[in-house]
Length: 376
Ligand code: KG4
Ligand code: ZN
Image 1 (cartoon, helix red, strand yellow):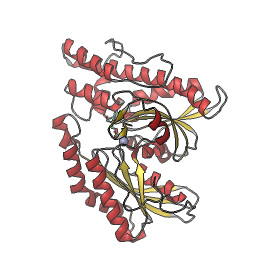
Image 2 (cartoon, rainbow, N blue to C red):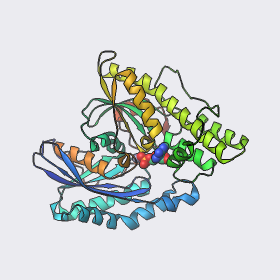
Image 3 (cartoon, rainbow, N blue to C red):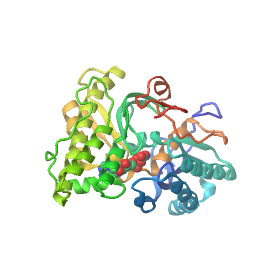
Image 4 (spheres, protein in one colour):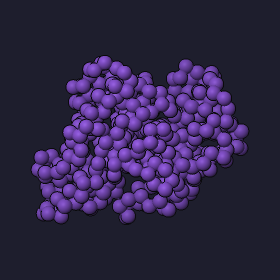
């Protein structure tokens, strides 16, 4: 984060407006933070674009950007009205500034800049992934340090979180994100969009051992992920199946089980790496956070809960409604930065790529480099 002022502690209570527009949800939220760090979500408005993207089986960036621009003002207005506050009461505007689809991020960030300038209050550029990383606090206490499994449509990472802005990546996907594997499998099977919830629902009446599918990287001596082969295996199995309701349910259940097994194996490895990273005793009690859209999956949550119980970790997760993209988590990350005096200049740029762990990503991104630097 580019700082415009020296760090200082803001003691007074604050009212933060959060804005989220990095993918296909246009969202705004007002959060009240007390001087002691406690907070309250006064409003959280989310306008989904699902029906606009459904015919294409995935998010279309141009459609998303236009929809954000059309809806943003009204969504912000509703968030302020629902919170029963006035624009003049706001202390700062926090907006997702990346990573994400550039058109949407620009739409939200421009709106935030305009508001911050007209109200003459600070702008806080929030990393969307940091929003997910702090989202368990929307359910209750979640002190640092913790091991974070961040599983969304765009990212799949295991991070050691030692403080706000203090992240060490322990593993990440070398190809597709977990949510992408759900979405693409659903698309192949004609289940509709977004795929995750459809796969979960279809899997409910299926047999998780019916279809033999791979568990990529299982047993490997690192904590990275790979989902491309699993996605292809689902497509092949679907082609070979009789495509009946029962066959679809069995395939969804088998795919979901494969994902659970992969998370179990990779997270187990990362738990050891995490204890080493924070210099904790083997088997010492620790915290584990699962966040991001895929964390809304109940089977995945219960499988991770069992792993945590066996490994002496306490599982913490955001409430289901704050797993997928929302602005409450952006307002919360913004409020934490506000308390530290971390403000951004009005020329802060939208960043389609913005790894949470800037340093380690620069050296060794599992997802590789693109023309503009590390991919994730
Ligand atoms: O965090 P999110 O809303 O957006 C990103 O930052 O990417 O995550 C969206 C992803 C989508 O891929 C969606 O299919 C997946 O989360 N998802 C789920 C479930 N609900 C949403 N995946 C599996 N099971 C679910 N119940
Ligand atoms: Zn997200």
